[in-house]
Length: 85
Length: 224
Image (cartoon, rainbow over all chains, first blue to last red; front, top):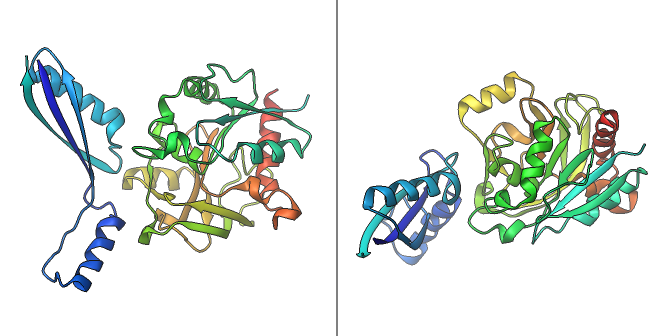
């Protein structure tokens, strides 16, 4: 089975997000006054061939923990969409 | 016999020649080792020099960690040899789990480039053995991701075990507890954001980095 994988990497709660804070501070100058809680992360997309969804998820979780995110400062969220057999 | 230092170069490393020159100025031997090497050629100590290993893609140090040479670096660290990471090298050592914690973007999202005062906090490390606690050293910094962070448990361990080796006198990047450099539990692996090699000759504006390099060579020499 082939899956489209999207991994969203975000900073853990309590870790300073200077990019988010800088964007939030800039918004009032553009007239956007009601925006708060801006957070910047990254999304990583790829295709994965695996035997089934559970195996695919386990592999991606492992990949996230060891490489795509640094668990000291980042969380990761995985979404899988089956696109072919 | 003069100590031999291997200086690791990844694609994007740019401080390796500065480290080589600084080491050689003490009469010791230094060789650049490319990241594809699977051996450090019998060196007594390793320095992972600064720069932008693998373009700092994903996170600084994240890809460097998987370079072949890192197996040899890890072996040396496990054998108790001095392993020093300067700037990007510190980031590589954290990503490799040879040091705890992580280096995030500087507070205020500022790239910092200048000369700072560092206070020697522990002399029980391969880079401070020839210094005195309380010495203040003027050494350049040059980084965007030097804001050291770790869990509160890790911070308590670092403090309790005297593993904070260097602190900023005036914190330039938001590092927790003003941390500029730490060592591992066995005390042979050290990471620091400042660049001692850039303060190793009067022509560079400061010679305060020499005591750190001298300490490294003294520690490496004892093991030969």
